[in-house]
Image (cartoon, rainbow over all chains, first blue to last red; front, side):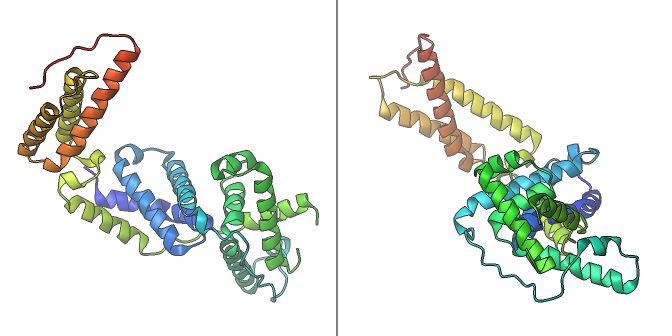
Length: 177
Length: 135
C-alpha cells in the first residue's frame, strides 16, 4: 500500500527536474505539464521499487525524455519545419562570461536573472527541430549519434540543427550571430 | 566566432540556467488523477494495478484457454465453423458468469490467436497436432 504523503514528498522532490526536462524539450507549458503528470503516474505504478531507489531521479529523467521523444514522434507532422521564431535582440547585448563572473550585488543579480529568463525563453522559442537536439546535447549530455538515432534523422542534420540553434540563441543574447 | 567557441559559449550559458520551476498545479493534478484512478472499479484500471489474485486468475485463464485452443483447433480442411462458434459462445458465457463479460471477447481472441500460433509452430517443427471434434 502506497502512502500518499510519501508519494507527494517524492513528487515534490523531483517535480522541478521532471518538468524542466519536459518544458525544455517540448517548449510548451501545457504539454510539459501533461508529460510530467504521466511520468509521475508511471512512477506511482512502480513506487514500491522506486521509493528507496537512489537512481529514482535518473529513472524519472529517462521516462520524461522518452515520453517527450514519443510526443515528438506522434506530432512530427506538426513540427515547424522552418523557423518562425524572430530574434528579439533589440535589447542590449548579453555577455554570459561577464554575467557569470561579475561580483554579486542586487542590481547585477537582477540583471543576471533577467538574462537567464531571456535565454530560457529564447530556448523555448526555438523551432522543435533545433530545440530538441540542442537540449538533448547540452542538458542530457547525449552524443550526436544517440540524438540522431532517437530522432530518426541523419548525424549531419543533428549537427546542423544544433549549430543553428546555438546561433539563434547567441543572436538573441549577444545581438550578433 | 568559430564553431568551437560557439559551442563553448552555449555550454557556459546553458549551464548557468536554473531548472525551471514546476507549476504549483502539477502535484495536485497528479494526486487527483491517482484518486480518480483508484475510485474506478478494478476492471477499469490498468492491468498492473489489478488485485494480485485477479491478475493471477486472468493469466491462468489465458493460459488454459490458449492450451485448449492449441489442442482443439481443427486442422486445415476440417474447419467446423458452427462448432467453433458454439465453443466460443460457451467460453464467453463461462467468463461472463464470472462477472467479467467485457474480458471474455479479448481473452477468447487472445486464446484463439495463441492457439493458432502454437499450431503453426508445432507444424513448422514437424510435430503431429491432434485433431479433435469440437462438437
